[in-house]
Every structure is written in structure tokens, then in C-alpha cells.
Amino acid sequence: MEYVTAVPPSPAPAAAPARSGRRSLAAALLSGALGAAVALLATRQKWSEGTATVAGGAFPLTASGSDVTGVPAALAVVGLAALVAVFAVRRAGRLAVATLLALSGAGTIAAALLGASDASALDEKAARAAGDTSATVDALTHTAWPYAAAVGGVLLLLAGLLALRYGRLWPAMSGRYERGGTARPRRTAPRVDPDRPEDLWKALDRGEDPTGA
Image (cartoon, rainbow, N blue to C red; front, side, top):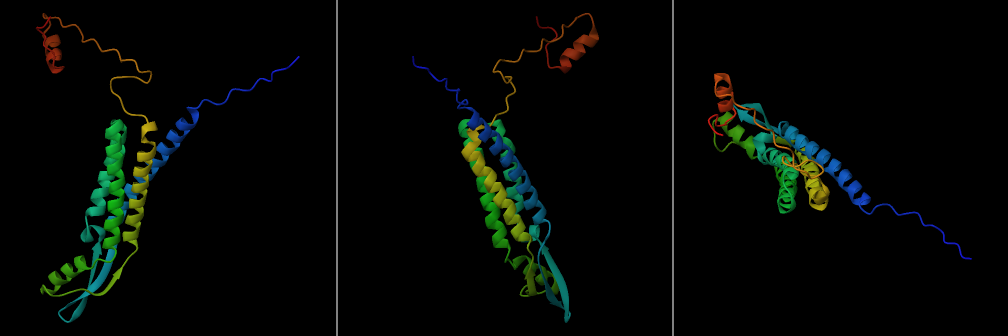
């Protein structure tokens, strides 16, 4: 007599994609929010400093990230909005928004690295301080904040790449259906008594026609 050994059932094939979706979602949210915060914070800090010759003396000048370029801050805001919008769309719309998120990160990196060696903002300040349009800044030095903004861009780019790769596994917002896929019951409007003026006014406030059937 032959004995058949029972083989334990294998885990459901949908379990692994579900775990990947949850982990990638958490990583994208953390990366995107942190990246946008870092980029916005970095643009408010001092990126460069130097001196201008005014009335025979050295006049100190500084330039913040927003003085040098407004691109990283603007793209950080766009990236944060795209991160939120990922959950409001599906399929092709989600792909487009995820692409926008990734491009926002890439643009933030490029703008921050270009601004790391920029001297035009301080040259403009030197010209105003000296009253001479040909004046330039002396003893120019740069800080590490532009590179911090670039790190924020890297985090935004990572969030976009995660959305492109795993976005199809993420949930989407829905105002009409519950989780089970069944339609939510519609709320029945309160009955309006035509003999009560307060009911008529309440119906008008709700945008209803109190004279309708």
C-alpha cells in the first residue's frame, strides 16, 4: 500500500505583491515628504557669501538659496503635490503623476547643483551696494546648503521611481465606493413641511427645491 504525503498549501500568490505595495508606499511617502521638506528648508539658508568694495571698505554680502534660484523650492512644492495626487488617480493618470514626481526630483537636483557655484546673485547685490553696475563680489565662498537641496531632490526622485514601479499596487481614494466595492447608500433629504418656514429656509440652504415633489 502506498502512502501519499500531504503537501502543505503554499502561501497565496497575492501576499508578496501586497507586502511589496505596502512597503513601497511607506517608503515613497516618507521619501517624498522628507525630500520636499529638506529642499524647502535648504533654499531658505545661506548658499554663498562675499564682500563688495563700498566707499573704500569691504561690505559683507550673503545670498540665500531663494536669492540664487527659485527652482528647487518651486519643484519641491510641485513634487509634494504630485505625491498627494498619486492617490487620487488611477492607471494612466497615476503613471503621469508619478512621472511628474520623478521629474520634480531630477529638476531639483540639477537646479541645486547649478546654484552651488553661482555668483550672479551676489554680483547683483554688490552692484547695488556699490552703485556701480560693473561691480562684482570679492572673496566669494559657498556653503553646503545647495547640496542639501540636491539631497532633497534625490529623495523626491526616489519617491517618483517607487511610484512608477509599484504605484499600480497602491490604493486610490474613492468618494463613491467603500472598500468592498459596494456603493454607499445615498442620504435621504429631510422631508420639507411647506407650512413651516424654517424647513423651507433649510431646504434652500441645502440647494434643494422646497416646492418640488
